[in-house]
Image 1 (spheres, rainbow over the protein chains, first blue to last red):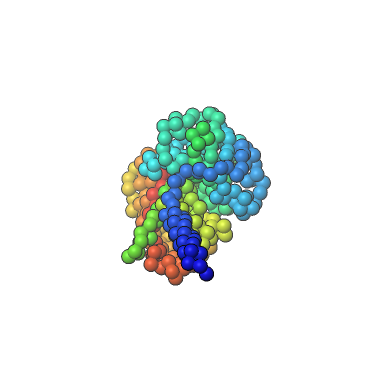
Image 2 (image 1 turned 60 degrees about the vertical axis):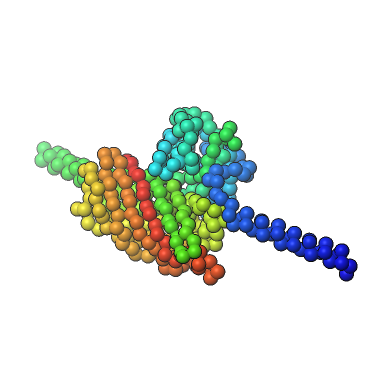
Length: 155
Length: 183
């Protein structure tokens, strides 16, 4: 092998190693922004999403949605500021009795805190799935939870 | 006439009995559980703000913490925790169901801070264990705060830490619970 070729090969190998180190370092230290930034895999209305959750087994539903980014549209039912946790939980109207849909915003913001019951919103969130009560549970509601939410017009 | 009086008395007794047996329940779906792992080389914290919690006036206490709701500072650590260690697809929740041991040690109808001992079953990673935890029940009008600090061993709940990570992840996990409940 000629000297020039050998040099090129060494440079190539070193470059690959360097890039690999940078990629691994980036992956290992990538911080959790706490906001769903990826493009939504599913676009749903609260009513359809809840209906699907009630008609499907927990495991099948959670397998489909948990960890996925979804764009969800509906009406605000209530807004609970959680100052101790530096977050805000927005409950969405589920259209079903005994069903709670909670969308957690990791950082409190005036825009979220000022949402009013009945207001139409579209959120981008990471889906946490559904949790249905067992027979001896004190909480009788079915819970649909979303996290890392943000208002769509803020994306 | 006697028959009517007997029926009336029975109905009254039944109503009074029902009223007394009906438990008041305080609950939330936005409780907080934080855990800390600390070794000589690394310390990390995970926070869960979507814990379901409830307490009844009869001393029943329940918590349900979705595994996927734990947020870590680093994304990769979170992915390892959910998929490899806790296997959240198979075991999606950590669950505690218990009972305050001494019913006279608290009163949800009276403001105050009550130190209690709660005995029950803690299920993590599909493994259930009988446990007793110390805790505080803080009653303030229509709101109740539940607080507790305790530790668990990963090994006891079948959570395997890979050999090359034992320096980074402690077997002993310190857990802190703080949930604000309302009726």
